[in-house]
Length: 172
Image 1 (cartoon, one colour):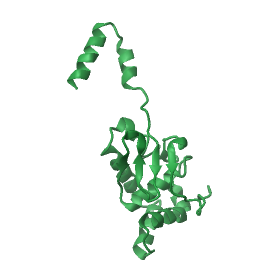
Image 2 (cartoon, rainbow, N blue to C red):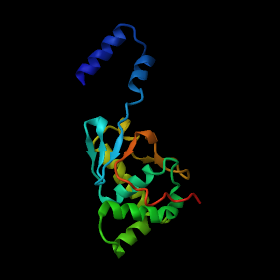
Image 3 (tube, rainbow, N blue to C red):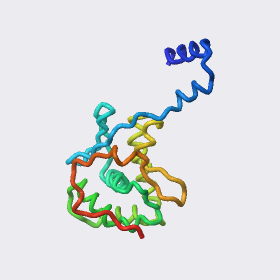
Image 4 (tube, helix red, strand yellow):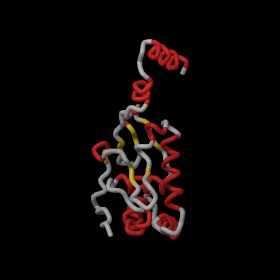
């Protein structure tokens, strides 16, 4: 930090304007691709193969939003219930049971806070590894009442696993 501070002082001394320094500080980050591996690990290969670790349900929610770059309004999450259940089953590789059904029902119920809790876990998983300047492109964001989504460009998303067996939910 001292080295950075010293260089900023030197740039100011050489006549670099404050707005130019701010532009340097606010430049867009170089974003890593995100790879969903065949065993459903989340890897950022361009950031030294950093792995993002999440529990199965937040991971399934994350993958659902990756599959929908157009975003998903939280109030319409119930339309994505079957797709989320499919993703969750793929991630956990466990048999369907009442607890899983209840968890999926809670996440897709617009009267419950479960989707916000899962989004907080996703956000936390990235913020543990990166500063928000970089991490914000990988977690679910959006304005109240509007579709929520992941701002990472779709061309940066690499699926090593095939999820084509289950088509995305239709907009309703």
